[in-house]
Length: 598
Image (cartoon, rainbow, N blue to C red; front, side, top):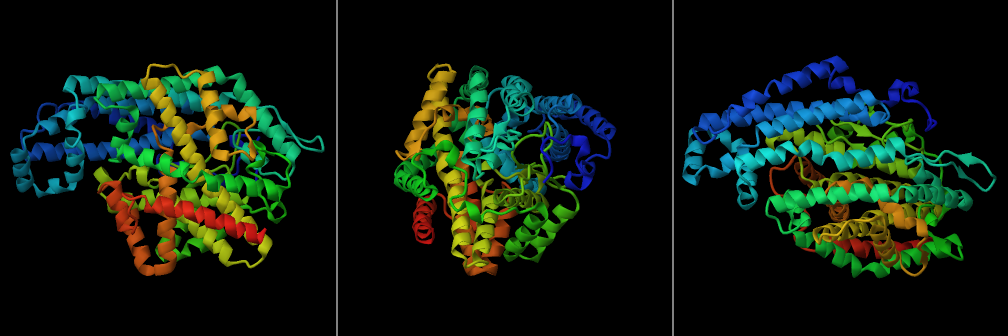
């Protein structure tokens, strides 16, 4: 593991992503940016003409495909460059230019939705008969026409499209604030030794067996966040003002409905998840009680929630070992899948270690041209190995969808976005458990699985409930003040973790460091996706080749159907609560096994 205080320029090349696969130089990127901006008049020239003929409509779709693919690469390059060192003003400016180009193209094509909406059914049928190639865009046409009641006039659509650059402000400002400007005092361990505290090193420090260090890191991080609570709250307040503006402009009943309608997910799915988890909080409280007992703590604090219950079974897992283990664990998905993973490792699709100014956390870029990229902040821990498997799941989903779908349906929707990543995690856990009979090691691994489940299902549902609260308060005309957010967050923390957990005062400001609150009701899908993934992984391990074939069809599906239908291909029906209830039941079973092993 590299020193997290290392400068970007000092990181060995083999641990950095090769962004030259997109553009050989920054100059080449700038030339492409100008070339794309030059296409804006060509796009605008289709205005008022989409209903005139089949050839015109097809030509517009073809041009849009070309621009979409190129824009994805343009923004992907700029975003990756900016994220590798958020203190680098040149690349921050580059990302701004890429967004500006995106907004210019979106504004120029804003006429397309109302025009496609206005084409009479009989004329559209005639177009399809005349140019069968239009069948490639059937899903795109349906997605537009199904939202008829929420589409505005061409002039109004242009205005909304032009506001896109301003609309990115809350998320961009929040990211810069958290990752580039906000610094923390060092954490100090029981021997008086100082440890560098960053957004990326916080969780590894909280995993330490040294309780003094954990408490110090916790108080240092949340103490610092509380100093900027009003700034953080104001950024979130404007995020929800933005969501409210767009949802009201398009005639939705709520920001939740507007956000979920983008992926054809009923709001009942969101609310039913919260309800189901509330009905199973006893299992979460039982987990907390077990953790308190096994740690031998008189009081269990929030800085005790990450450290392994079986701490002396923890060991260092360097990046090379993590790679080889992930490859072995995922071999059940077939030789072609493993070969693709090796390509990602060998051809530098991955940015591995933390450096000064690098964006915290981990992600797969989502872009697929020429291939996905993965950002990590690897810490030589079991958790980092699971993060590697997780993000590669995203990358493989993006790769397969781009390979087997036309551009118009190559992007999968967020409701299924966490499925492939979590399937990889479940397969990795099952593999590790299959390789040991040692009770202590098994208990350590099951503890990790319990922590993953707790963090993905219970914790993300708590985030989802908090996000729903913010949306409803904003829609009621209230300002999201720091005190309002802190009080509600502390209340939810106590509800979810139960009476055996001391909800330390600092945890009331955890919302200030969560980037997902800028992703428009995204987090609930971690919980639903986790439940679906457990079911899919179980099917792969029990049914073998048939299940793997179905799963790869799902990976290759992009957005060619609604998300519920796509998951049915993989053998999971999320239209009913069974997968969620089954997952929550599994959590209870794992607690029982842990009680026997520990």
